[in-house]
Image (cartoon, rainbow, N blue to C red; front, side, top):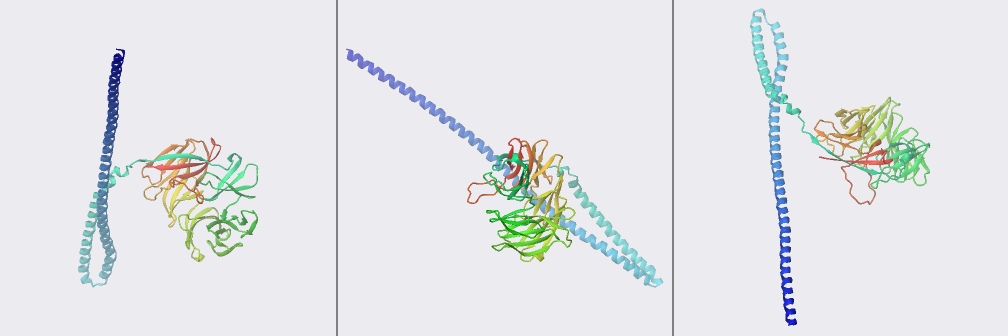
Length: 488
């Protein structure tokens, strides 16, 4: 019997286990069902949201297409109106020109006729004047009618209503390594590649390279006097009018004594500015020293001096004709855009862009921002035309020009409010752009906008839209880059 009871107990145990397994299976199925149901609900919800967004995008595209179509119709109507107004102006010019020439001629002829014909001639002139007067009245009526058509457009206040566009100012900060800013008395940017520093308590000046993509600066060499211009050409450094070997630090050549500025056109070719008649000299490296190839005076007055030169950086320096920004000093600093045929300096052309200015920033292949004490001008440097002019608010300092700047659709620059610690969008053309951002750091000094130089054979991507501002931050107590990215 014990065996039989044991068998029954085993049978009951197996039944219990089977039942438990079934229950667990049902629970697992319910869990799986619930999970699948939740996932399906989420998919349905996402699909619903996606469909709604797609519908919004589709509706917006449709409205945008309608707006473009309406704009096209408006422009066509404007062209037709312009044509009619031009025709009316043409008729008015003909009418007034005819009256100013024909009537005096008729009056002169009337004086030569016999007395018995004078009355008849006077009547003819009177009839002519009456007809011409009727034409004048007709023209005036038409002009007034046109003006009455245009007046509602001129009175439309919505024409002055701007569509505000908020720009997001994204900021990040990069610490600059390789320079102890606590030991620096002064810092001056020389060009896109170099800056010069003077250490506290020392009379020498260090020439340093701009930060590379690894945020590293390096001291290249030291000079005894504060340089006006520094150029590095392969393994040579040209400091004002001295050339020396970078590796050995030994002098190679003393250039012309009155050289006041210098810039590199391309490897082996320099453009130097002199202190007499603002002369420009083309210098070429012959393997031993630099030789003058060509030179030309920009002015006949000997007291003009070329104190700074900067190559127009949006053109190919290998072109025969190059463009250069030149600072010319006479009684004050003047900014010129110089066009030079490197094969024939006699064809040099100059366009004056401003005087008594504090600096400038190249924007694109046609435009430059010229900085004055509290003012910024956007100038077409080919024509000299001032496109925009703006006085900066109190306590605001020019920061730079975003790379998205467009002279037609996006005339925006950035300023720094030192009192409120804000980076601000300055809308030059009143196109409705606005935006500001707390900088989050106490900035002691902003040195200027720079370009990051990519190392040879270096990987990685750089955000070409980012503005790079070289500054001194008191909290970090060192040099830093303020990276600014504008987003719509």
